[in-house]
Image (cartoon, rainbow, N blue to C red; front, side, top):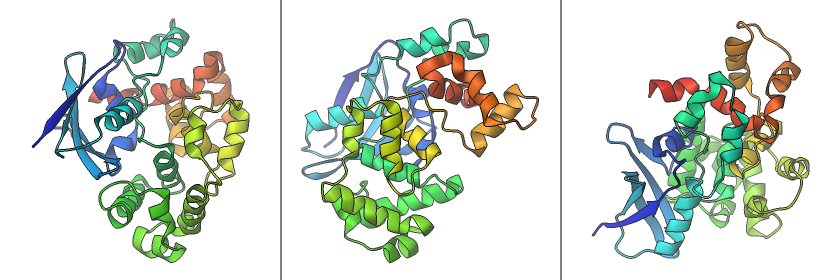
Length: 287
């Protein structure tokens, strides 16, 4: 029998803008039904998988759960986390006042970046985005979910029980294969705690350095991860962001990264989120 949870959302929250904030809604165990505007995810509690379908509701989010018994408190905490319901974006909206090109951000209540229930899952998914096409990213993540997590995102312990050959042949992870083994073993063995990145007092530069100690995480991946733990001062430049900047702000001509950095410097600690919103406006307008 299906059960429903209702979660109240802050006035500045938009379900659609959060779901469309970046590509995570396309990565398993998320799935998005655009026609009916439903976002699905298979959560995890002590009893196993908790399939849930999330949709807009008046002043909140409705969550329909198809398992009879589940840990409602944990699932609610996970939901608040993935939708960033406790994030305060007032600083973002203040930073863009007077910048007409960015007026749409406040109008669309954009700025919250959808994330996974755990930093570990976001870390693995981020590594899957590096040096490859988005299509291959989706294949790798789907293989990890189906072949190691039985429809859920696997735990570090589940990812640690297979070797690099498995990741290479079954997941199609390529050069990342030994990195996934090492990462999973480090977390399962208590030598690394990505969840602690959410609450650490480390300065951002030191936290970025710690993230880059994980094999497969360079500047781009670390600065994307920083955004997912609430640190927005890194631009996370990649070929796509650069190309969009050239087109939107430099007459389609290539330029040095220092010019991009100067352009967004005025937005201070919010500059990484501002550049992302600036370059993705078309997603929200078209949809």
